[in-house]
Image (cartoon, rainbow, N blue to C red; front, side):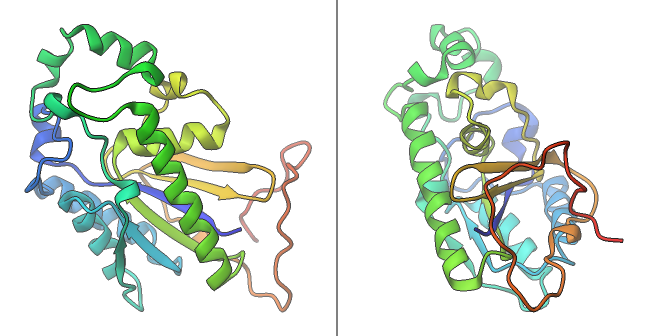
Length: 236
């Protein structure tokens, strides 16, 4: 199967001021967030991307455009509502410090699989549709571009944490242990039997090492883990 890079959008004014933006329209990258998105693009510049897929919200599409612009062939950015931010309902637009006083906050922190936002979405439903979206796209990219292909999904913090929790095989109730910073890149490789989490929350360094080495034969896709840890992906 192909290799998935999960990219969180760059910082927004809402992030910087502690406001839960949710699905609010018109939330754009701030100057620092745009610089973060461009830095992420530079990290991927040596890695040909078979697809760039984004949440439909502006901050993700702006980040995805920067990533696509950094590619020699400037791939078209596709959008998928499966990657959209969780619908926080009436929590949307409120300050996090105020929300932390709500009884539901404790559930979100300790038992998120039971959290349903008022007039919004449950975290369980958010996780299910996000995982379904990346699995669907990964199968499509693998079929169209082969098992050595690499593609990017640009999404939101909680969405990416949910996808990583699924790939790690941990319960959604543990997903708050995962950190996903603005414009960070995480890497997952799916195989027929299980996913491999290659990297999480990286914010520096080229990911060019994920490029498949030139070879005549296609890489054999294996679900086996290397006993002892293996030799890694870097080539001398």
